[in-house]
Length: 108
Image (cartoon, rainbow, N blue to C red):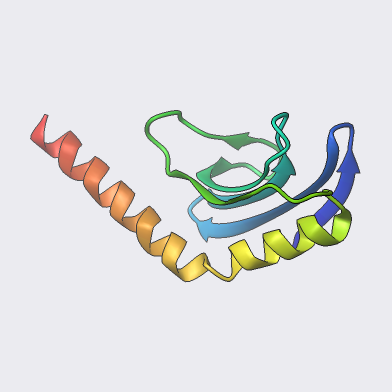
């Protein structure tokens, strides 16, 4: 389920997709301080209350970056929806990321 709300920094959309075994894929769309509207996808673990992400180990990808004239609820929702349409491709890149990580670990 996607949640869209206005935070202290402006409109923000978030969708968390359960991947099983405590793993989730988290999509977040928000305005950065440079004015860009950015949607990212991050994989991590969740216990239902907290999201944990290991930098340089867990999958993370900037899905869409745009600089709209105004960042409204409608603009945020539209960009977030377009990012979610890429879910299958992102899941494939996520699987490849972890396959590479397991190969690197085995080689070490």
